[in-house]
Image: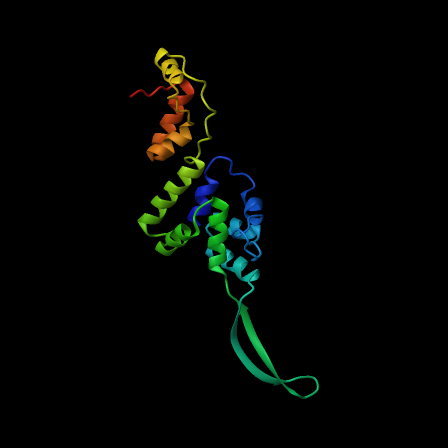
Length: 194
Protein backbone atom coordinates (compact mmCIF):
# COMPACT_ATOMS: atom_id res chain seq x y z
CA UNK A 1 0.00 0.00 0.00
CA UNK A 2 2.88 2.34 0.72
CA UNK A 3 4.23 1.62 -2.76
CA UNK A 4 0.88 2.48 -4.37
CA UNK A 5 0.40 5.63 -2.31
CA UNK A 6 3.99 6.68 -2.96
CA UNK A 7 3.65 6.19 -6.72
CA UNK A 8 0.37 8.13 -6.76
CA UNK A 9 2.14 11.12 -5.19
CA UNK A 10 4.79 11.25 -7.93
CA UNK A 11 4.58 13.17 -11.22
CA UNK A 12 2.66 11.64 -14.13
CA UNK A 13 0.37 9.70 -11.79
CA UNK A 14 -2.70 9.65 -14.03
CA UNK A 15 -4.64 6.49 -14.95
CA UNK A 16 -2.26 4.31 -12.96
CA UNK A 17 -5.00 1.78 -12.19
CA UNK A 18 -5.42 1.13 -15.93
CA UNK A 19 -1.68 0.75 -16.43
CA UNK A 20 -1.51 -1.57 -13.41
CA UNK A 21 -4.27 -3.81 -14.81
CA UNK A 22 -2.43 -4.01 -18.14
CA UNK A 23 0.90 -5.01 -16.52
CA UNK A 24 1.94 -8.65 -16.69
CA UNK A 25 3.26 -10.03 -13.38
CA UNK A 26 6.50 -10.99 -15.10
CA UNK A 27 8.03 -11.76 -18.48
CA UNK A 28 6.60 -15.00 -19.82
CA UNK A 29 4.27 -15.28 -16.81
CA UNK A 30 1.02 -17.00 -17.72
CA UNK A 31 -0.90 -15.79 -14.65
CA UNK A 32 -3.67 -13.31 -15.38
CA UNK A 33 -2.87 -9.76 -14.22
CA UNK A 34 -4.82 -8.42 -11.28
CA UNK A 35 -7.66 -6.00 -12.05
CA UNK A 36 -7.58 -2.22 -11.58
CA UNK A 37 -9.72 -2.57 -8.43
CA UNK A 38 -6.69 -3.98 -6.61
CA UNK A 39 -4.64 -0.83 -7.34
CA UNK A 40 -7.55 1.41 -6.27
CA UNK A 41 -7.89 -0.48 -2.98
CA UNK A 42 -4.12 -0.29 -2.42
CA UNK A 43 -3.89 3.46 -3.01
CA UNK A 44 -6.81 4.00 -0.60
CA UNK A 45 -5.06 1.91 2.06
CA UNK A 46 -8.10 -0.37 2.41
CA UNK A 47 -6.84 -3.80 3.50
CA UNK A 48 -10.28 -5.43 3.47
CA UNK A 49 -11.10 -4.22 -0.06
CA UNK A 50 -7.66 -5.33 -1.26
CA UNK A 51 -8.11 -8.83 0.17
CA UNK A 52 -11.67 -9.02 -1.24
CA UNK A 53 -10.41 -8.04 -4.70
CA UNK A 54 -7.60 -10.61 -4.48
CA UNK A 55 -10.01 -13.34 -3.37
CA UNK A 56 -12.47 -12.46 -6.16
CA UNK A 57 -9.85 -13.09 -8.85
CA UNK A 58 -8.13 -15.99 -7.09
CA UNK A 59 -7.52 -19.27 -8.88
CA UNK A 60 -6.45 -21.05 -5.69
CA UNK A 61 -9.23 -22.53 -3.56
CA UNK A 62 -9.09 -23.58 0.07
CA UNK A 63 -11.36 -26.38 1.30
CA UNK A 64 -13.08 -25.19 4.47
CA UNK A 65 -15.49 -28.06 5.08
CA UNK A 66 -17.08 -31.04 3.38
CA UNK A 67 -20.28 -32.73 4.42
CA UNK A 68 -22.75 -35.15 2.95
CA UNK A 69 -26.37 -34.37 2.26
CA UNK A 70 -29.29 -35.84 0.36
CA UNK A 71 -29.89 -34.50 -3.13
CA UNK A 72 -33.18 -34.37 -5.08
CA UNK A 73 -32.96 -38.10 -5.88
CA UNK A 74 -32.32 -39.03 -2.25
CA UNK A 75 -28.70 -39.95 -2.87
CA UNK A 76 -25.92 -38.92 -0.56
CA UNK A 77 -23.65 -36.38 -2.19
CA UNK A 78 -20.61 -34.63 -0.84
CA UNK A 79 -20.90 -30.87 -0.65
CA UNK A 80 -17.68 -28.93 -0.28
CA UNK A 81 -17.39 -25.39 0.99
CA UNK A 82 -14.42 -23.60 -0.57
CA UNK A 83 -13.00 -20.11 -0.35
CA UNK A 84 -10.58 -18.32 -2.61
CA UNK A 85 -7.08 -17.65 -1.33
CA UNK A 86 -5.58 -14.22 -1.98
CA UNK A 87 -2.47 -14.64 -4.12
CA UNK A 88 -0.05 -12.31 -2.36
CA UNK A 89 2.87 -13.47 -4.50
CA UNK A 90 0.99 -12.46 -7.66
CA UNK A 91 0.27 -9.06 -6.10
CA UNK A 92 3.93 -8.54 -5.19
CA UNK A 93 5.13 -9.64 -8.63
CA UNK A 94 2.68 -7.39 -10.47
CA UNK A 95 3.46 -4.36 -8.27
CA UNK A 96 7.17 -5.00 -8.82
CA UNK A 97 6.73 -5.23 -12.60
CA UNK A 98 4.51 -2.14 -12.65
CA UNK A 99 6.94 -0.01 -10.62
CA UNK A 100 10.03 -1.48 -12.32
CA UNK A 101 11.38 -2.87 -9.06
CA UNK A 102 13.00 -6.26 -8.45
CA UNK A 103 10.37 -8.66 -7.03
CA UNK A 104 12.62 -9.66 -4.14
CA UNK A 105 12.89 -6.01 -3.04
CA UNK A 106 9.08 -5.71 -2.93
CA UNK A 107 8.90 -9.00 -1.00
CA UNK A 108 11.43 -7.76 1.57
CA UNK A 109 9.69 -4.41 2.05
CA UNK A 110 6.34 -6.21 2.37
CA UNK A 111 7.85 -8.55 4.95
CA UNK A 112 8.96 -5.62 7.09
CA UNK A 113 5.38 -4.38 7.29
CA UNK A 114 3.99 -0.84 7.23
CA UNK A 115 4.92 -0.03 10.84
CA UNK A 116 8.63 -0.76 10.42
CA UNK A 117 10.57 2.52 9.95
CA UNK A 118 12.78 0.87 7.32
CA UNK A 119 9.78 0.26 5.05
CA UNK A 120 8.74 3.84 4.40
CA UNK A 121 12.32 5.10 4.06
CA UNK A 122 13.22 2.36 1.57
CA UNK A 123 10.04 2.84 -0.46
CA UNK A 124 10.61 6.60 -0.64
CA UNK A 125 14.18 6.04 -1.84
CA UNK A 126 13.13 3.48 -4.47
CA UNK A 127 10.33 5.67 -5.83
CA UNK A 128 12.42 8.86 -5.75
CA UNK A 129 15.08 7.16 -7.86
CA UNK A 130 12.56 6.00 -10.46
CA UNK A 131 9.88 8.69 -10.52
CA UNK A 132 11.33 11.74 -8.77
CA UNK A 133 10.28 13.31 -5.48
CA UNK A 134 6.58 13.61 -4.61
CA UNK A 135 4.71 16.59 -6.00
CA UNK A 136 7.45 17.85 -8.28
CA UNK A 137 7.27 17.49 -12.04
CA UNK A 138 10.52 16.69 -13.74
CA UNK A 139 12.13 19.87 -14.99
CA UNK A 140 12.78 20.10 -18.72
CA UNK A 141 16.42 19.66 -19.66
CA UNK A 142 18.29 22.91 -19.24
CA UNK A 143 19.99 24.59 -22.17
CA UNK A 144 23.75 24.10 -22.25
CA UNK A 145 25.50 26.60 -19.96
CA UNK A 146 26.98 29.64 -21.68
CA UNK A 147 29.87 30.18 -19.28
CA UNK A 148 33.39 29.94 -20.65
CA UNK A 149 34.24 27.03 -18.33
CA UNK A 150 31.22 25.06 -19.61
CA UNK A 151 32.28 25.70 -23.22
CA UNK A 152 35.76 24.49 -22.42
CA UNK A 153 34.33 21.34 -20.83
CA UNK A 154 32.16 20.72 -23.90
CA UNK A 155 35.18 21.18 -26.18
CA UNK A 156 37.09 18.59 -24.19
CA UNK A 157 34.12 16.16 -24.23
CA UNK A 158 33.62 16.28 -20.46
CA UNK A 159 30.03 17.54 -20.37
CA UNK A 160 27.49 15.63 -18.29
CA UNK A 161 23.87 16.59 -18.79
CA UNK A 162 21.14 15.39 -16.43
CA UNK A 163 17.77 16.56 -15.18
CA UNK A 164 17.33 17.87 -11.66
CA UNK A 165 15.33 14.73 -10.81
CA UNK A 166 18.18 12.48 -11.98
CA UNK A 167 20.72 14.61 -10.10
CA UNK A 168 18.60 14.48 -6.91
CA UNK A 169 18.34 10.69 -7.22
CA UNK A 170 22.11 10.44 -7.79
CA UNK A 171 22.82 12.42 -4.61
CA UNK A 172 19.96 10.67 -2.72
CA UNK A 173 18.46 14.03 -1.76
CA UNK A 174 15.38 14.24 0.46
CA UNK A 175 12.16 15.42 -1.23
CA UNK A 176 12.63 18.88 0.32
CA UNK A 177 16.22 19.13 -0.94
CA UNK A 178 15.03 17.93 -4.38
CA UNK A 179 12.44 20.72 -4.37
CA UNK A 180 15.13 23.31 -3.65
CA UNK A 181 17.25 21.89 -6.48
CA UNK A 182 14.24 22.08 -8.85
CA UNK A 183 13.76 25.74 -7.91
CA UNK A 184 17.44 26.51 -8.52
CA UNK A 185 17.41 24.78 -11.89
CA UNK A 186 14.29 26.64 -13.02
CA UNK A 187 15.80 30.00 -12.13
CA UNK A 188 19.40 29.65 -13.32
CA UNK A 189 21.83 27.41 -15.17
CA UNK A 190 23.98 25.34 -12.84
CA UNK A 191 27.56 24.41 -13.72
CA UNK A 192 29.50 22.17 -11.36
CA UNK A 193 33.24 22.28 -11.85
CA UNK A 194 35.98 20.11 -10.43
